[in-house]
Length: 396
Image: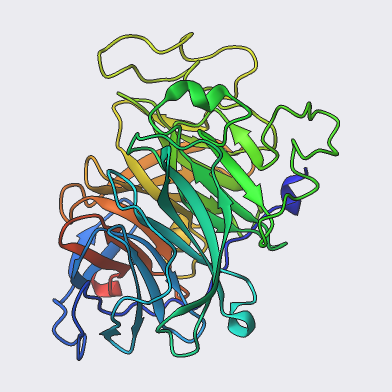
């Protein structure tokens, strides 16, 4: 598939509003003032917009300026005009266990007319836990989900409570890309009949796109592969985004002890885990065959030691022209935001900048607002929403 045929995540207007996880807020006027922070290219103003969130995992703005926020403990909330709603009713059965719970949220491209959203979450059956995707319609008043339908459920559940993946990106053609980790059982990432350890792609109704690499009509499909697969050999990808300018799909994943990776998932390709890795097992032992082997794709960037990456976005905003086309990656371990300077012609990473180290907590997700400001979410018991904007010219 040609790169220019792929993908853009919906870019709705992003009004950044003060949030609270469990109470109504009358106003965001009490939000602390921002502080000026130098970066390599420009000084930025970092504002704490809200605190008190219960492990926020995904944020999605609505066209009218409201905001949908997931909390990993199992609540979806609507924020409008500085007020945080009570939990939205109608969610499917969610199993909040280990690293699982209510995870990402994304809008259909026609949300303004259809009110359709997609959510990713962990759920339970008799065999244990697994990742699922549901489609629903948000009520006009934002209080409830209606016409809720599970459109995907992974094909092997276990009692392991980690590596659910779950970031969603919606393509221009309406198909959904999403991630599932290896579920803590590395060998599953090399089993092409297993949904674990993969980037997957489905239609908005849950059916299989006919141009998926292992769809039944494809020449390389043997019938043993899961038809939803896009790429395999991923450990636990929690970041996924599509460059709206180039149409390239990017994913970022957790390694073990080192070996966090940025990849460009391409159809039918194998990205190596656990046969090749730039990290080591937590015991210190080598992983698989080393850092490279025939038949496995190389990452475009990796970290050793690990930064424990969360969400990521391709920066295409007006506020920071210095960052145009760069990748912004949230990091949990060192509590920072990474900026990877990407050369658009060669696709190579030219440099890496680490910002806000240890200042704001474990950064789980990063988004670009309509005005080009950057929104970060911290995954904490008392999680925060942070807005990064360009500092006044006098401070640069």
